[in-house]
Image 1 (cartoon, one colour):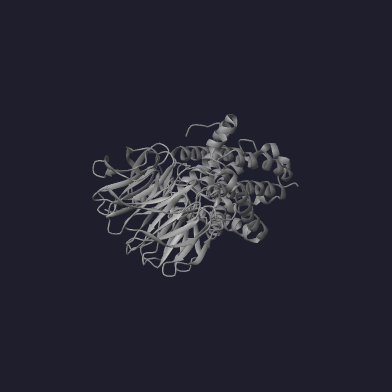
Image 2 (tube, rainbow over the protein chains, first blue to last red):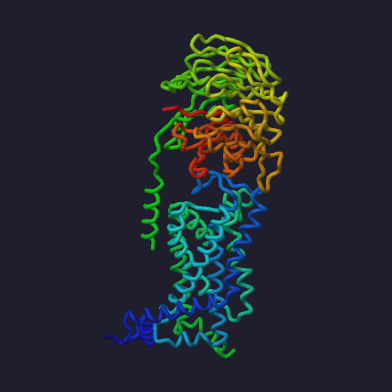
Length: 291
Length: 323
C-alpha cells in the first residue's frame, strides 16, 4: 500500500465500516436509532398532535374558505374537476414531511446543545451510517403522520383512488429523505436552538408558499412570471408534484429526477458537513456539549 | 427506489384501463352549432358534426339509427344518420323548438316551441304535424309516461306542469310548481313525474294519479349561495332507486335517493351543468357543462366524477346511443 496523505487516511477510516462489525451490528445500531426517534415522537404527544393539527387546519379551514375563490381547472393528473380540498391534500402531505424534516434538524441542534449528540457521534459506526439511520428514523415517523392525516381526510370525504394510497408510499419516502437530508444539512449550519425561527422564516414558509401546494403553477404564472420562476427553482415544487401524481398512479419523471438529485446533493452535503475531518463541525467545536 | 416507483406506475396503468363497452355519446353545442360525438370508452371526441343554428334538445331513435336535434334558431328539427354522421332530413317543428321527447313506441315526437307557447306533435313516419297544443308561456320541459298515455310539458313563465292526454292531445291537469320549470322526468313505473324548477331551486315530485305535488326536493350546498343552485336536467335510474339532478351554476349534480327523496351526495362537475344522460348499461351518467365547454362522466356505482372531456362551445343536450 502506497503511503497516503494523512487526511485521506482519515477519510478512508471514517467511510469504511469499522472492523469487527457485521451487518447485524449495523442493524442493531439502526434499530436503536429508530426506536429512539419513535420513542421521542410518541412521548411528545403535543408534537404528534401539532404535526396533525397543522395540515388539518389548512384542510378544514383554509380550504373551506378558499374553495369558491380559487376554483381549480382540470390539470394533470386530474381527469375532471376536483374540490380545492382534494387539490391541496398532496401539498399538505409534503408540508408534513417538510416540517418533520426541519424538526429533525431542530432536534439535531438540540442534541448538540444538550450534549446528547456526543453519545451518537462517539459510536464506532461510520458517520454517514449514523446520519442515514437518523434520517430513515425521521422519515418513518413522518410517513406515519402522513397516513394518519390521510385517514382523517378520508373520513372528511377527501379520497384518492384506493390504490393511490399504496402508490404514494415510494414518493413519500423519497420526498421525506430529501427534506430530511435538507434538514440535516441545515442543522450543521445552525449554531443555536434559537436560530430555528430563522429556518421557519427562510426555509419552511418560502418553500411551502412558492410551490404548487396551494395553487396550480399556471395560476402563479398568470399573476407573476417571476414568482413562477422561483417556484420552478424550488425543490419542494417537485416534491408536491411527485406526491400528487403518485396518488393517481402516475410517475412525474422530471419531478422524480429533481427530487432524487436533490436527495443525493443534500445528503452528500450533510455527510460532508458532519464529517469531523472536513471541518464544518470544527467551526462549532465550542458549542458541542458545552451548553 | 426509482424502480419501485416505475413498477408502481405500471401497476396503476394496468388497473386504470377499464373494459366498459363502447357507446357513442352525442352532445349538442349551442354556441358553435355542432354536435360532438364522444366514444364512451376512450372518452375522446371522435367526430364533430356541423348542424343548424343553436342546437339544443337532442334525442335518438330506439334503434339508434337516427338522431333528432332541435336547431332552435333555424326553426327546424334536423335528422342525423348515426352511421354517416350526416344530416339526412328535417321535421316541421314549428318555431324555436327547444326540447322534445320521443314517445315510448318511438313513433311520435312531442316538441316544445318556446316562442309560440305550443307543443307540436309530430308523426315521425310521415314527418307531419299531428297536432299543436296551446300551453303556458315559454314551454320547455317535456316528459312522457312509460305507458305513453300521458305527456307533460312545463312552461317556464307560467310556472306550470301541463298534463296532456296523448290520445286526445288535450290538457287534463295543470300543476303549479316553483319558478321556471325546466325539465320533466317520469319514474320508470310511471307513478311520479319529477319537475325541476330553475329559479325556484326545487324539484317537485308530482303524483301521476292524483296530479298533485307529493314532495318537494330542496338542495343545500355548504359555501354556495342558494341562488346559484338551479336544478335543470333530471334522470332516474331504470330500477327507480336513484335520481340525478343537474344544478346549473352550482356546478354539481345532486344524487338523490328516489325512494326517500333525500339528497345523498353532490358530485362536482364543470360549470353550469345543464342536461344529463345515462349510458344504456346505466353504469355511467354524463353531464353537459355549458360554461366550461365540457362533459363529465360520473360513475353511477360510486357517484364519483371520473373524467371530463372538452367538447364544443356551450354544450347543452346529450344523448347516448342505445347500442
